[in-house]
Length: 265
Image (cartoon, rainbow, N blue to C red):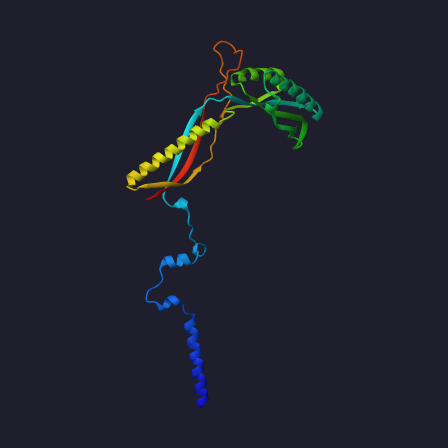
């Protein structure tokens, strides 16, 4: 009996000592550990779902810069369309008309590298037969469309007239748009305006809020886009048909947007 009690006491002492060794050292102090101690000890952002981002800290502003430019290039989408009872005949007629159109484009000063095929298609032409409740193929339509880059905008009307004469009734002029061949300098100017606009907004917001701005800690440029001026602007003369199709390129607006984030002191 005495041996049993002695053995039980020894086992109890072992259990108590083991439990004491499992307790954290901080529990022996009177105060709990600080939050900074936990953060310094380990990165808990993934476990706690916390996302630390400089973009969410400070004062964020958006700036916008715009400049206008006169287009120096016209993009003319044109081609031919032929319809015939067979594919071979339709394709031959379209090819002959397209050869004439390309020759006119080149003779008008359009370089071969500035003529690009955009669409070529061969489709059957169908007719619905009501009494038989079905359709039948009556022929085939061949379409060949190219984009011609005209680098002398003031000649766009003359080129259109020459193409129409060369292709005859098979001519198709679908669309015309205007752009700037090298917009780099315009983007640079618009970018400077966008940054200045963002800085002005940041200073105004800081002044109203009564805070002091630090240095910029984040800056990003949004997608810059030059919207093309589209449409075929044709004016009729007061007396008769004009000798040359009048074209008005108008102006382009180039826009750049920037986002900036400042430190707050």
